[in-house]
Length: 296
Image (cartoon, rainbow, N blue to C red):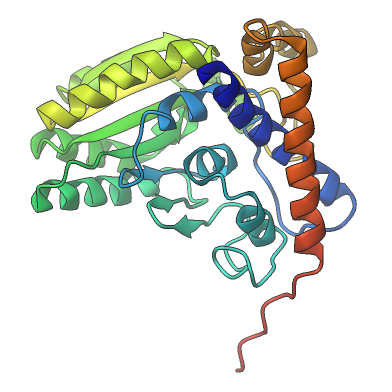
């Protein structure tokens, strides 16, 4: 049952973001989009351990996190298409999303202090809710990250920091922009940390279940690095990575890994259900109105 649920969620994220590429090519979207194709296991593996009152903070590559948290396909698609029925009235677009318990923004690293403030507020209220913030390896080039690491350690803020290391900061490989180590950065601030290289959603689910339970009991921060890979471009067509490198990571596609645990009939059934759901959302969103322009 868990396998099928996880597969459904990951297929939903994958097919949704593939649909965005189609809509952009057809001129139905404005602005840009940043997909998490290849990183679905991180979103589903972490967020499936959370409860409704837990808070999730994302970044410019936020669709997967949002869908894993809310399952709100039509609200997200309407928002990205700029329609008034989107969860932010069509004004937030692909990157700037807010709904109950979910926040994202496109400015690199800027949501980390926001997430820590929300986590600190929950601590002051005596809440059992946990705050999870997702950042990428590229965000570790921002000074605000280190200012915030200092405070979450000093004030013992119960927050889970998930670093999705997909090995590229936009188009710059990790070895050209990153010195030292991920764990060394956590150690410098006396924050407990761990790392895992995996696209196996079940492995990630089990690992983060233990981590989240520990944060909730210890009321202290934790940093966990997931070494993964995005199979798609940074945004739409800006991809000059080595094709052989991409091919080698396709063998570790999180969907393909989980399909080995499922029957063919299960895979086909879930794929059809997801495609139908997204197609119906597309039809509904295309008929929606755009928001009215504010009067000057």
